[in-house]
Image (cartoon, rainbow, N blue to C red; front, top):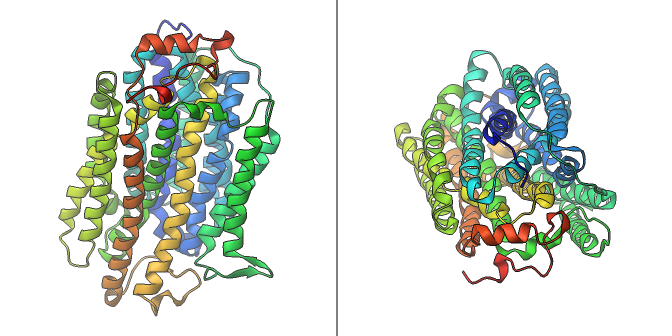
Length: 508
């Protein structure tokens, strides 16, 4: 731990940028129908606007965490903020969907530079026994941003146009840059080598897997061109990712993915759980927004306001949970939050009929907010508690990467499932290439089938988040602060010894 007299101003300044980049993972969801209409495209192309951002965000994270260790988290954060802000301006100026997808990919790369630095700063400037409240703020920021994104997006789309969901980042980015420049301390750096083969293998594997899943329905899960098939791409992606893991195990230098971190049971399980959370938070928004706007006729703002109970309760309760994390075993809080999230999503599915009172949806919305407040801080604290200062950047990169991988897979999987369910429930209407080309209104005769398809689709993230709850059940009891501090200094440079006792070897 590096001594910083006033760590909180530094964290608050980083929260500004962190909040902005997380909002952009969900803000597009409420604008999708308007983007489809404005750029004259279909649902599959519009979902690539989100998937391109998430892919470019997720794949470099393992490297950008190391860049923060090597060149200083403050410097890398500021560079990323400049890239993100300029790319946001490019997004708003895009004249076609191809340009928008490209701009979103650059925006995602800027976000990848920024994100690991926030967790690395928390880990390096706050002592282990003070990280709970800091992670509570970080968790509140993550949870509220992913819920506020659609609300803010709805207001901007209705009042100014879809372009402004991107233009709004420009002044926020400028303010965030000034605050971080003045308030974030310059921390010590560590020398690192960079695993270029690992970067190429992970990027290729993720792209093949996501492209295969998301485009599967477009090609009827068959041939794309010549001998290339959808399932061939998916299998190739899995094989390449397997080769990536193998290379990480064999690499005698400094591998991109420090597999020894996963010897700690809590680190492994927290990464599993946050992957399911990323999947769920991304996948749940699309069926809800399309149901609200196309079946119930709500405007983007009205549909976003249905999510207000989520955002309010998550924002109010997350700091409270952050304070509890240092006193209560995070296993109990996280498991409860993840289970409640699954219940809330299943509740939404049951309510999705054409004539259900729209006010009934505020109840599962509120439950989702309560659930979210109990997820972010416990998982982040569990994952990072035993990290040494030297491993802060790498650990933060792994943790955020797994969350973003979940988001990427959630975006691709929900797109494929929606198209599949529409083909089953609305076979005549789903004859188009995307299986869903409704940009604005939906004929009343299709409301029942469309509602059924959306209800069936939202059960997928409900099932996935249950897997996260199963992982959280097996969290080990957190190691006392004194033992965590001993492990952090067990080796020169604060690196964990492979033989040091970890919570993976401690009874729960």
